[in-house]
Length: 284
Length: 354
Image (cartoon, rainbow over all chains, first blue to last red; front, side, top):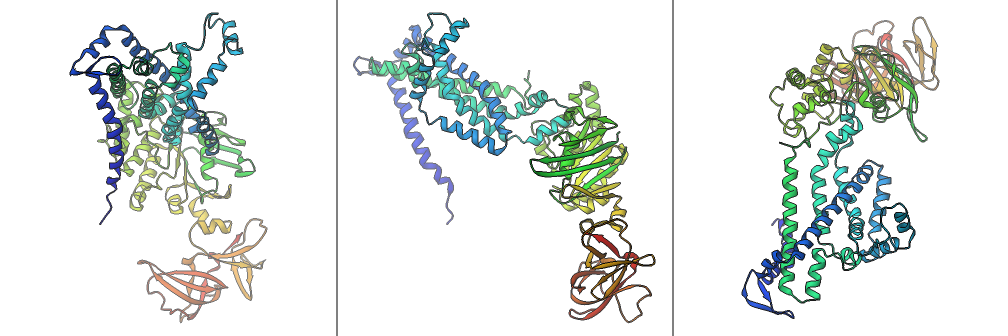
C-alpha cells in the first residue's frame, strides 16, 4: 500500500488546534464574563468587558499605540533591510553565505540581552546621547529608557535580521537574467528596480512585512524592558491586567482586541496589495 | 544598422583567462556566429558587447563609437537570451513594448509597433497573455520581437534555440534567418551547434579556449579548417598524426610509418604535431576496379558498419586510428574483419596543425 504523505500533516494540525485554537477559544469565552476580582469570573454571559474597551480611553490608546509602533517598526525595518537583502541576493555565494551566517549568529544574543545592550548604548551620560543632545536631536530632559523611541529601536533591532533573511529569499528568486534583459532593452538601474525587481518582489515583500507586523504587535520583551513600564502596548497591558489586577476577563478581552488588530491589518494589507496590478502600478 | 569592432578585447578573472586579446569585426547587416564548446569564450565575448561585463583590456566600438564604458541601457542593442528572460509579470504586449516604453514612445505608436511585431512573429492572438501561458517556441518568438522592437543597431542572441526540440529548432532557424535578412540587422549569434551555425551565418568564428581559432564562411571553415580542433568541431573528420611532411608538386607529402599521403599544403606556419585529415564522405573503399591514378591509398581493416537510412557508416582501423567511411547503403559489401584498401583524391586531404 502506498504511504499517504498527506497524513503527516495531521500531527501539526492537531497541535495547531490544541495550542492555538483552544487557547483562543478559552480567551474568547473568558472575555464574555465579568471580573469579580481576585481572578474570579461571573457566571452570566455579558459584553460588559467589550463595552469597557470603548468607555475607557486607555484601552483604545493602547491599541493605537501598538498599531503605530508596529507599523512604523515595519516600515523602518523594511527600508533598512530591503537594500541589504537585495545586495546580498546579488553577491557571490561566498559573500552572501558569510554575511547571512553573521546575521543568524547575531540572533544568538537573546532579546533581553539586546534590550540591555541598547540601554547601555543609550545611557543618559553615554557618548551617543551626548552627541544627540549636542546636535539638538533630543532635549536635555530626554531619557531613552521608557520612551516610545526606545521601544521602536528595540523593535527594529529585533526585526531587522528576520526581515533581511525573508527578503533575501524573495529577491534571490528573481533571476539576474531579467535585470539584464531590462537593462539591455533600455532601462537604467533605477528603471530596472522600478519596473522589474520591485513588482516581482512585491508579493514576497508584503508577506514578509505582515509576518513582521504580527511579530511586533505581539512583542513583549522589548516593549516591557525598553518601555520601562511607561509604554503600554497591548501585550504589556495584557500582562499587567493579568499579573497586577488578576482581571482574567479583561485580559482575555484585550487578547481578543490584539487578535482583531492583527487579523484586520493582515486583511487590509492583502487588500491594498491586490489593488496593485502585476506591473506594480496602482489600479484606479 | 551598424558595424561592430572589437579591438584587442580581453577578459580575465584573477589569474584565469576567459578571453585572450581578440580582434573581431562584424560588418553592417552581417550575421556572425560565435561557435565553440562551453568555456571557449563565446558567451564572454557576447556579454562584453552587451555591456554586462567590462573587458579587462581593449575596447568595443559600434559604428566607430567607443562604447566600452557605456552601460547596457545606452548601447541601443537588442538581446535574445537563452531562456528568453521574458518578464513574468508583464503580458506579451507589455514585454514587447518594454524597450519602447523606456524610450518614451507615444502610446499610439507603441500599440501600432507591438501589433506589427506580433504579426511578424505570427502570434497576433497572444498579446494579453502572460509568458507562462504560452509555449516555449512562442516565448522564443516573443523574446525576438522584444529585442528588435525599437530597431536596435545590433542584435545579440545567446543560444536562443537551445531549449527547443529538434523539429522546432530547425523551423525557427529558418525563420530567424528570414527575419534577420528582412530587417537587415547586424547580428551576433552564439551557439555550440555546428549545424545551426552553418544554417544561419554569413560568417562563423570558431572559438577555442578563449581564442578565435578560425573565422570565415561555413564553406571556408568546413573545407579548409586550419587546426585539428576546428576540423573536429566542424563535422566529422578522419585524422592521423604524421612524422614529417615534404613539399611536392602542388601537394605536400606526409609520411606515416611507411605510408606516404599527398595532401593540400598547410598554408600557415605551425608548431607542434601535424595531422593528415580526410572527411568520411571523401574516402572510398577499393573494389574490383582499378584505383584511379594519383589517389592516396591506405590499408585498413573493417570493424563494423552502421546503417542510418540514407547513409551508412563503416568503421575501419587505418594507420592505427579508427576511421569512418561514409557511403550509400549497400554501396560496399564488406564484412567485419576483412582487409580493404581505402583511397581518395589528394585534393580532399588536409594537413592540420594541432
